[in-house]
Image (cartoon, rainbow, N blue to C red; front, side, top):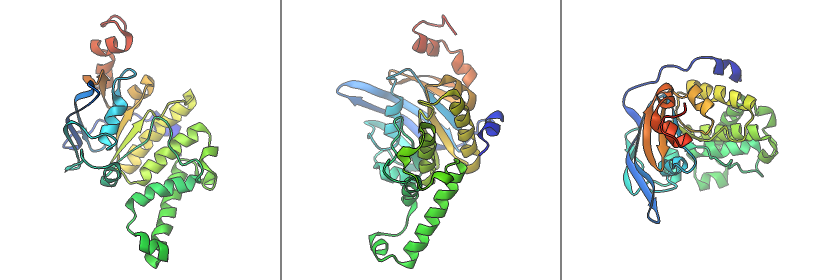
Length: 274
């Protein structure tokens, strides 16, 4: 994978049109604290969108609402025409929305390829009986899953480590493996929760190329939470900013960079420093 070359290309113009993921007025409170209020998001197919905000702004809570970890107290979430706000996480993944986590959640004792194979099984069609009996249909499915898993590992330059325990990988490779596992579910929308956390500058540069590459290669819609503002401004076409659980700005990277409310939220002074 030539991530550097991909990173050097300018991002395509932001797509427009009907929303693939349409979020309307969702909210949730914990013990009287309004963690997220009246959150709205409209993601057309193929967009690369950023969600940013200071620590504690509610970004990961939004991801947890979108993926069924929490059920919204208010509002609706529609994925490709289907309401999902009351669905369980595995149902949402099967519907086409997958995520990575701020803290890497690989199965460390399993091999690299088995982590990806687990993602592929979201689309599996054979039940317990055929698995136990090892029917021809089951065996054919398992062979297809193995081929698909190796293809994904090759994209992320991990094929030569397929048989190793995932916990043995360097940190940056574990991040890429988690993205590969999310892609194995064949998502329509991919949510990336701080994928650059803990990476050095070179790894972040490669990550930017990887994110662009998977968007172009798989035709994905991507929503990115990230604290590295340089990465967000470099690859995202539009950005929404949260502060104290509320949207304070939405727009292009240049609009966000010059927005006084955003500057105040990050720096604590209204428009005084850019």
